[in-house]
Image 1 (cartoon, rainbow, N blue to C red):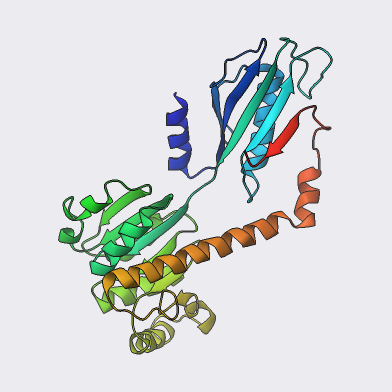
Image 2: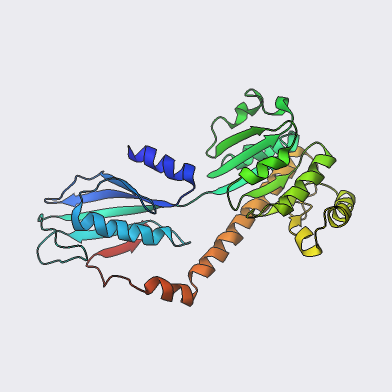
Length: 300
């Protein structure tokens, strides 16, 4: 399998990984510059030469997979019999520099309702590296011609036409998916809000609409849905940046996208704080190998 296909497989699985590349070679080495290895949690694809270099790189790559603050790193190896690594000696006589590039699991966003605002929002979010789910009960909202504006998207687009029960898609979404509810039908919106609160593992839940609409929804969610106040408060409405009051679809979409990107940053900072927790560092340090004779330079 090519390294490109391996990276695509990790993304499809929503599994973190690391792309390891032989960046420079001086003297004799197992592989030439440009050789690549893809490291997943339990599998690897490709090779950078085997032996101590590859084993140490795999160990470090899997450490990176378990951290929130993932930045590229450089690793330098001297290949001589005076350097002993945790996996043995490699004495080709040269020196090798590796570049480790983390492949984090991307954020996922589901937009229920691809009308005027939904399509404008999709156009903005499609420029981000994420998994974007577009769901609508109306087939004419999801035609190839209409969605052609997303053809050059960086995001991976997943289109779902659900003519009867769009809320069934919620159970199919990846863990942590951020949900935005903006369909053409208030009854459909209400059903989605109820189902979203009953679906474990979702990220944020946002609902487009006025304060009057939300007041009616809150009452229904409590009285008919049986949800408590804390659960109902998981739904954010109105969505978007406070202070941006324009009603044009593109203006609303920009506001909603900016608010969502801000939520991503806040989520990432919480993950970093958890990763810096001394208790996690202590757990991670247990059974760790002794210091390895290579240099690491971050932020490559």
